[in-house]
Length: 233
Image (cartoon, rainbow, N blue to C red):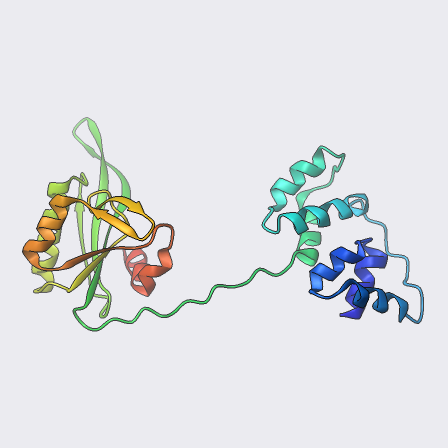
């Protein structure tokens, strides 16, 4: 760590306070690392990126998720003429590692849950018209058994008819069906409160299953079965 601190300050010309934040230490620790050095560092091979390195470090410190493409556009305005490749190499050296999310494995009992979604398969010519081709998919979360049927629309009547075919195919009804916020199922999402489509709620009440909406922009909530269904289809 001390060697890296010395290199960032003496070679890359980082500020001591910036290096301290980079390693999560007090600035005095960085100063001691500089004072303990037995010899002066070697002169590095010059790089066309050298004049811009302090600015890059400053921007990444302020905005850790800043992309290389965005930084390249900013550096172009400051006279940088090299490719993005050299910039990406330097960013990979100085950007702080991003924390990884931890996820719990989705485990359900047999018959407890099914996952439902539409898939798009481009267009199909019907006479002189081009019609969108969709696939209705229902996957049983425990067994990964899958039902697929194709349609030229995603209207509510078609959506409900596809459910009936899927339930007949599986020979039963799961306790819950999980949906990825389809308009046929979910009207509004306000925080954790979900307003379901009344017509679809009546359908679910007839077949006695509980509709469940996955959190917005959180595909991991659907677990491995979601990946399974998209891969198979």
